[in-house]
Picture 1 (cartoon, rainbow over the protein chains, first blue to last red):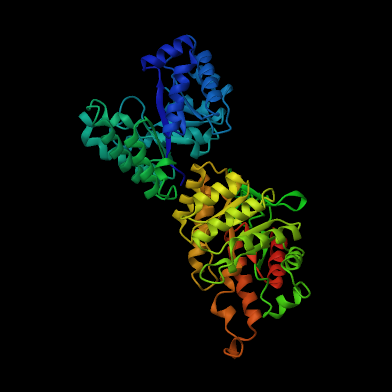
Picture 2: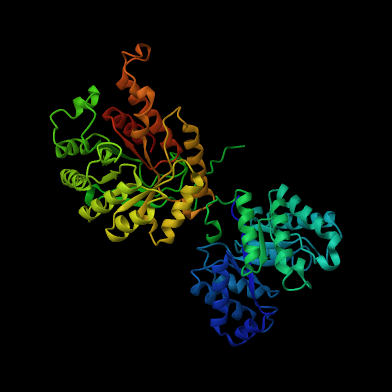
Length: 261
Length: 313
């Protein structure tokens, strides 16, 4: 197995700085945040432009080119509900460091994003949900199968479908945590790649607690076979946990300086 | 259903490292396939063979070596003869006599010998030290300066002396070094990390992950080579994509099978044949495991291994 893939989540229009930069098409704050995340260990950078109903295609093209030109063609996850914007982003995307990721499809309204990924030789993050949170792992698996079938019929390599089990918030859904982890194990047993929004688990907990809960979750999920996460790579504890887990899983050969690599 | 062949070609590849200058310069590594899997894709460069001579010449107690070097008396003549050995790509000068626990040949004398060897040959040169941290540091620094511009390979820098050797041989005089980690895969990677953190470029160093003659711990060498190649190619671990050089001769000719005489062990037969067998089977094994260059001593071993490389690559 290869190393765990960190998808940096910090270029998100929910951040006031990024929102402003996107409105003004000011490259500097966006490039800085991309570079910080890459230096901290991100392989992919997620580019969330929000719904971007007005100027989605134009904005995504600009963001893709701005980030890739400044960051040695770092691979990107294109994250928006606006499908035209994703297609526009892919049209200017440089693949030399990796395929683009379509973020995301689900088994409901967004299932067509699987077709979009297939048509554009992209990776797709496939949420194992339809509307709301799946009740149990049987339901998750049903959606997983629907998505997988859709992708394979469209000619996708299953390796390019990264299934998202939907990490759930601990505060409020504590009793569901092991279910999610077990589902990661089921995906892994099927030989499938997986990813997900890791920081969901620690939502609403105090700031100093979040890295601890995120780190424990990622370690337990990696043990079950999780291959990627959408997360904050600038969280040192979290990244160190992932690097250590990659060593324990033999995904990466140990050397005394492994944390620096 | 028809069989569809799917070549196992990796998107990552072994670094290329060139030693020597001019037409006869030799490049190690460069491939993106498992060792000898040339049915998947062509190998970028063939495995290279270095012929070992020492500061005191060659071992003329072995009839085959005595015959090959007949008439070559001075170190220059011996070096020139080694350079024209069929199948050889470069010459290796092993400064065994520099060992402080042995003849303790002074650094100045070693520099002089190295110069004579370098001047006598038109193929690349590698220098093997005395395997003593202090002496090797002094030797490699002085020889590196004297042979500046020759693009010489120094074998080897170790955990204890890599800093000084890398600073002098590579940074000051633009030569090449090999990082040695006696069959310790984690140390192999760590040394590469440390060298790269010093600013040494990937095209400036190879690694010697250790050697052992067949039957003398070779299984550890085999598993080390396998894991290194898997990390380098399948896991795209850039800190293990250095080409590998394996000094086979010093291991193969140091084991009992290559040392004891026929008088003492009549059942074992001719000593030279045994030594060549050890050298050939160890070299073939490390090449199959992923070594990009081997150091050999006997002309017959060089002929056999170069034939194997020609047939399989």
